[in-house]
Amino acid sequence: MNNKFLSLDWFKQTAENAIAKAVASKLESLMEQEQVGSDYDIDKETYVKPYMVLKLINDTLTVVMNDGNILSKPNATEDDFAAVSSAKNAHEIHAIIASKEVFEDAQKIKAEADRMKALQQGIEILADLPDFTVEGTTVYLTGTSRSLPQLLVEEFIMVVARVSHDFIDGRTFHQALNEDDQYVALKNFFMWCCLNPRAEVAHELYRFLSDNSFRITKQGFVVALRNVVTLHGSPELVHFVSNTYNKVKAVWKKNPAEYTVFLKDGEYVLIHEDDLTKTETHTSTTCPDCLGDGGWDVIDDTEDNDWFDCPECDGTGDVEEYTYDEVWNVNHGEKIGGLTELYLDLPNREENRFTDDWTKTFDIRIGQVTSMPMSDCNWSTQDCAAAGLHFTADQINYVGCGDQSVIMLINPMKIVGIGAHKGRCYEYLPIMTVAREEATRILHDSEFDTITLDEDYAIRELESLAEKVKEGFAAESKKYEFNMPAISAAEITNIVNSLSEMKATISKRVSLIK
Image (cartoon, rainbow, N blue to C red; front, side, top):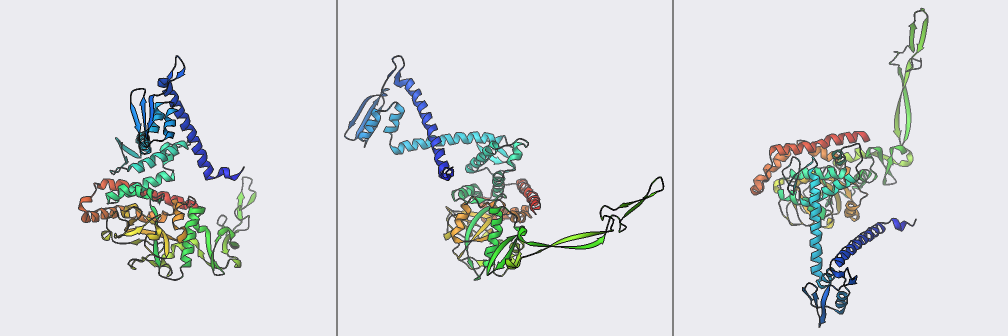
């Protein structure tokens, strides 16, 4: 088969053709109904024109319809006259007479009406699920008092529809939903939003992320970009370790602990544990079953002695303990260390030092949280010139001017402002350096799966979460007394408990891949 038939363009074209045929068929059906109702004399089986009079004087086209209505189109052409004269029904004439703008507006109104009808049907489906509470057309995550933004409701509806289509018997539908990564990510994301004391940010954040093609992790954190300034001239190991560690997880979907970093001919290389040479050593110890006797002397009823060898040591009285030591082929070069250990140690390395271009005061390190006092941040809808730690997804060249781009994780609870393309937070975790030319592209690449990049960060964020939330609301209340949203201690407890469930899930998953 020719590969071009498997391309994205081929699939898109095929889908468009299918849609076009379906629309044409529907229009044809409607036209036939309209013709039968008014344009045909069924008894005589003769065609009746849908208009009585058609005139084109200068550039004004005038049509007198069969029902007496008069339609007029200024700046008309002979093509318009010919189109109306050959029209089979009133619907076609109205489409020709209407200006392009009026016709497009009518189409938009119809599309919006169809969308709202589908939304209402989707909301009714959500109402039957235990994760949601619905009051009229307002949707809440169960246990929260902040309503879901319409765009996020629509996203939930699409995910629920997808999961229901792929649903396999053996689980409840609720179980299937909560095992879906995207569904869980959206739930966790909005729970974090509910804990953000800035109600405006929580309400508009998903729209901002969607408009600017941000990614969200399974634990509900935002994956974003910014630029920093390198304080040391040769952070090559930082670049290599942070890039390979996260790409092993995000692209290969493998465990970084299975890889070792070597330095060969001035370049860092990555070797999987299966490619390392293992040497076997053993030591002899007393058998714990027979205590070194090699077996047992058994006396039966005939008073004959029967000797049984110990199955553990085969009668020798000793057992061999084997250990395996990993060694590396000299061709691999100099061993630097295990990939996971190196990544976790990055904050301690002298070459892992960056700062911001504006103040030159921030201590920015891969793998270490960067923060500023929440009270020093400003709420603003401007992209620039507002206090806070800036981030973006598509405007990387203009955010935090510097020589190095970094990918970072942001807790939605800690975002203080959003503009058109850029946002501000008071804390983020830089997880990897990235080449400037691929900085934006990497977050748009479906092969780079961000879903598991934040497990360690999630566990840290869950520590003393209730206290952190109350402190944040208290600080925001002092700064913006008018904005203090209504959220009870009980609601905070419900959300914190729901989010804390991810800790056990993460721990279980990590133990399975070790």
